[in-house]
Image (cartoon, rainbow, N blue to C red; front, side, top):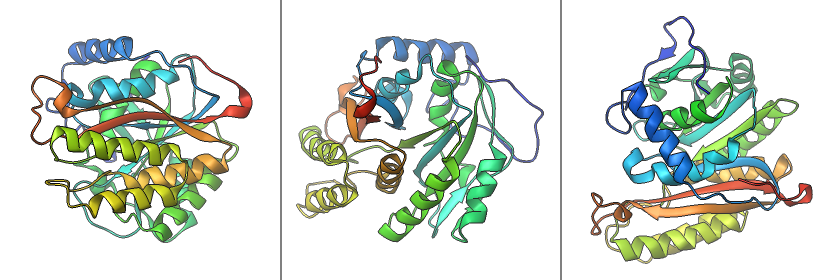
Length: 298
């Protein structure tokens, strides 16, 4: 279901990557998203859903992987989706929230949950209302057409971070855990995996990072990443561009009752005809789950 529109304001963020990362035509975009969702594997979770990890590249490369996670939301309802990802354009300390207004896509406009966002901003001086950081950012934007296609009307709290330090991640995890308590909210974190090694090297690094994510331990995620970066794999710039988001997501998921992470689909940009094999980017879709509440169909 597409979310309802509302009047444009100074805080209405316009799409930054419509027409490049995904189609700008509402009809074409809607058809593409439905196709990705229909083609995504139907995977039963090992427990009740507690959050998601998705990819954020152009849809031709990562749309299928993102759909493998977001299709888990079919038939569900949330008042708010907290979107957490890396900053690709700004370097800054702390955390940047888009705390007012709305985000627009070709499928409509999604309001910001201003009450939850304000609570986050008030909770720590390092959490700032920075719409300027969000203006060019693609990582959260590309999630919205998928969410608009599977959820009834919902609001969002958009958050990006550049500082992936343990201190910053713990601070944000503390603030988010407190803010979502008692609310009907879903935490969705987004990351891509290896950036720019050759195909086989990416598969090796990405497999190791997925195992680390499934360990459900932030220290293991950081240690595994450090180990692969220390190997000087040609052209491997990062093992996971959204490590801070994933580590924070793991911490929040644990505190709200998740018992593990289940990967749902892996691919990299070399798996599509236009991607090439010499320099690729990896993608994973995954879900946080609570095994104590039984299996849930995807």
